[in-house]
Length: 210
Image (cartoon, rainbow, N blue to C red):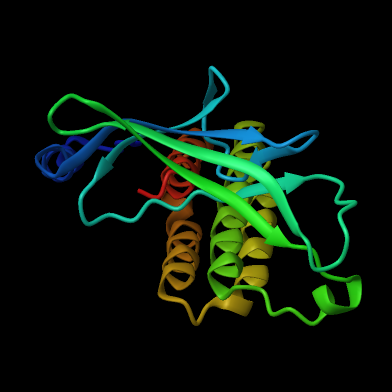
């Protein structure tokens, strides 16, 4: 999914896509959450959800794909006991055309609210949440641009940069911030429609780890 402003961009895009095709390690990859009881899962990447599976698509060697899931549940198990959310099945077709599946069991020990409050959040979660929030704000800015409200769109983008700056020490977050700033700096050269399409492409690529 690319927004192409002019024909000069086409060769670079084709080179990237053909490079990916030459390095495919898995096709049609999906994630399926099988809950253990009344537990729901939301994909913060907003991946397509087909036949109760989140669609990742093709996986390219050397490229990391991040998927962030949020779970909602009630835990009534005793402190210290094991709590099972369920399992996640990663399915894909390998390079020989065979369907393979890997299963991840989601088991955690129950802790008190006080103990949980002292836990340090995994920094990778903070980074991925920040990156996906930038993508979400790009979608909102896109809608504002479609309505011709450039001022609101820029306000949304500036707000996303300000919020993300707390994790700008990570190169991926810094890259996302730089891309947004560059778009705003050059925005005067483009119509609202073109800006809307560019924001849509940026948001899509961010959510899909491209």
